[in-house]
Image (cartoon, rainbow, N blue to C red; front, side, top):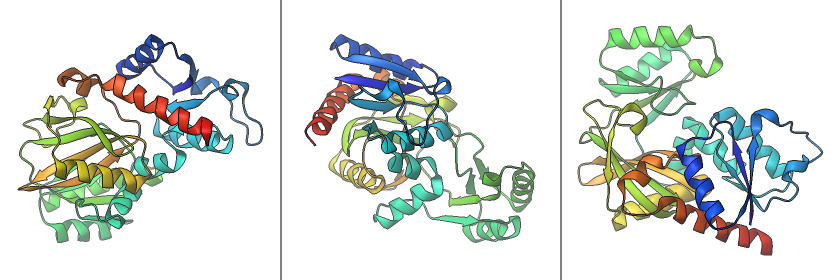
Length: 286
């Protein structure tokens, strides 16, 4: 199998994948998308002999456009452009989960500070304000009062970029100091971990402590349904516990798995490469 690894920076996650691919004698071409040009009608030479491409772009904008070009070039890519489009945008992500009947936090979208404030007041305090594009918990705010809401909304309105004028407002879920990340391949859970913190943001990127989490039938079913809702692929499905059940608050399309690999008694990169080999075989016989 000849794999094209699309990247803009090689992190620990990509090193784990590269090591596993090379241990199995697969040919790997690392493709730094910052150095490539993508023509609308002619496929770049670097893609001509690739059996499957793996999108590991750090920047969401690059991920969305590069996968769209590969789709136009008929180069199989994980994840697909449509999946990247749904997962990269929190509004589209929430709409896809809701349409599929996957339990997900109640969410409003507003386009002015006045209407956003009405949504915040309707949800009550606290509630959560998130950027529509973003990861690692950046620029997220837990809004505890009207004065805080007014200050945050004014700040966002003056940032300039149009995305900051799309106000994504979500109910605050009282979780037990942790959330759950499940890495899945086409809806099949590979492994899962909890991310715990005294802070309301529990992301591993924010310093959350990680620990192995056993996937039961309910979680497995939610992960499968959430994966199907965004088109499948190599995904990170994030859940929160709500009493005796769960809610899916996000599906990630360029999922990081180094923290998961470090805390579970399971070879996560090996399972991902097993799945990639199967995808490449499917594409070869399609």
